[in-house]
Length: 238
Image 1 (cartoon, rainbow, N blue to C red):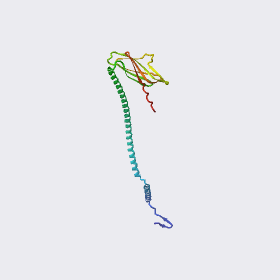
Image 2 (tube, one colour):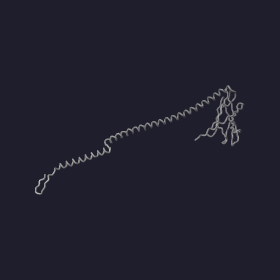
Image 3 (cartoon, one colour):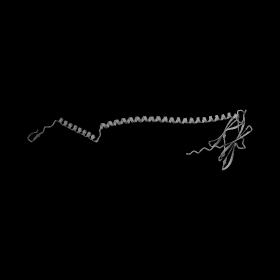
Image 4 (cartoon, rainbow, N blue to C red):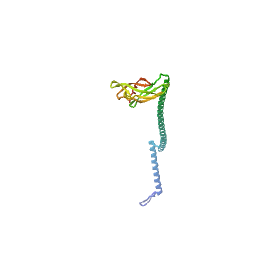
């Protein structure tokens, strides 16, 4: 209501507290409206902050669990690798031990056969005889192994002279190589019941051996025995 006094118009003013209250209510209304619009926009866009936070927490827990599982698997892998290396070392050691055992068994069998031959010589003809002869390749040279036996019935020691005559070819022609050389003294073996001799059998570089004759002279007897030359080992294929 306005009171008119002449031309002067006097308006009643609102209290200041009322104006502040109205402004506050308007601001709160605007904030509420804005928050409502923000939430509405989130729901329309399909985004939910609380659901997102829960999903992030679940993902963090899963990542932590997977990291622990990965660490446990890495530890198991390390232990398994060490066990596998130990098994490989033990396997190779066992293979080497078996190979040595096989060589030992073969050596013992060879010695057993040799001693049987020595014992059987007592029932055979008298005199020295060749029990065995082998030629083997050692690095780049040839080596021989010769075993002689003598019956137990014989008393005292005896001497045996040994020569090797190798027959073969060189340059497409037949050739004979003697060891020791004809002008050199023969190899000498001094024994009572048996003898086992080993040594080199040198040959010319281009000489191709085919056979070897072992000649033994002992107690007034002369023995000749021919042996085929061992075939060369097959070449290794890469």
